[in-house]
Length: 328
Ligand SMILES: C[C@@]1(CC(=O)O)c2cc3[nH]c(cc4nc(cc5[nH]c(cc(n2)[C@H]1CCC(=O)O)[C@@](C)(CC(=O)O)[C@@H]5CCC(=O)O)C(CC(=O)O)=C4CCC(=O)O)c(CCC(=O)O)c3CC(=O)O
Ligand SMILES: NC(=O)C1=CN([C@@H]2O[C@H](COP(=O)(O)OP(=O)(O)OC[C@H]3O[C@@H](n4cnc5c(N)ncnc54)[C@H](O)[C@@H]3O)[C@@H](O)[C@H]2O)C=CC1
Image (cartoon, rainbow, N blue to C red; front, side):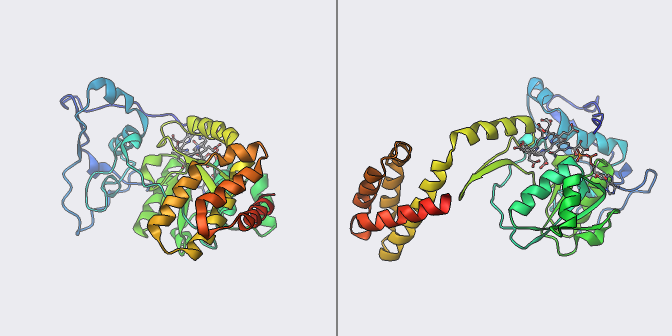
């Protein structure tokens, strides 16, 4: 994989300090061959007069906004980026820096849902691995596949639907991943996905996608996800690895146990306020320390004590056994 040259970040010479402007949207043609006339904005959208970015930030902070935002703006200047792309759904400019885009963190259920991955290199493979772990059905489009992806294809774990992307590949898809090393194609996929209201992740120009993939790990039901908002994926990876070392198997056992205790208490008490008090007190107990010291007796006694009439010591022991078995 050869690194892609990044265009320098420029603001207009006429732009006053703290104001960034981009005023050549009509020269853009996202994902279409060079020289293709620009598409007219859809009639329902307000007339586009060129976004002006009023960040109002001191120059030293502006300098920190290097790549993503300005890469997008530069691309606009160079004509490889469409007017539609620079507008949010309500016509508001959306090319704001990665670190300023406020993202909504959610844990999506993908079980049985079809996801499209275009690009079968290292990045595509990483996305496919995490999608399969989440129970998604993977549809892949790529000229080449990594050996692991080939193997998944041969085993029928993923379906390789072609080597040339076409918008029909987005039909019935819950999430799309534009993971080729061809930024123009990735932009086109993101544009097609947006038209179909399919959330799209972008391996290149991530600011033009609708979601980014965090660095994550799981301990049973516990999932820890870290994002640097695309500012430093390497740091996201490092934080993930550091946290992974801190969260051992005991967390999985504890969490499974707490889940079972919660179910038992909830099945016996409808008093939300009382339940809230019980569960908050439970998680304040040094349960992890007792588990690590193998002092399970104390953990069970204290759990039963906190749950009062809703859970006996023997019941707590049975739940503990169940949690232990599920984790090993
Ligand atoms: C925005 C985002 C979009 C997205 O893919 O969703 C994105 C974008 C880009 N990554 C790039 C590079 C690297 N990515 C990694 C690793 C990971 N990247 C992942 C996610 C994301 N990467 C999203 C933001 C996540 C966040 O919020 O921080 C992780 C977490 C999850 C995953 O991919 O599954 C996974 C770690 C998994 C783990 O180990 O835990 C490494 C580290 C390494 O390989 O050692 C490097 C090299 C070092 C570096 O550059 O930092 C480049 C430049 C490519 C080039 O230079 O050509 C771009 C494009 C750009 O920045 O323009
Ligand atoms: N988001 C992220 O985490 C990261 C993103 N990147 C960027 O993502 C891109 C992909 O990275 P890699 O997977 O390492 O690249 P790669 O070169 O290993 O794989 C690219 C894949 O896209 C396929 N492809 C390219 N053009 C195609 C086309 N027109 N139609 C169908 N398939 C096509 C190729 O056959 C290949 O399988 C690179 O541009 C890189 O800069 C790189 C590292 C991390």
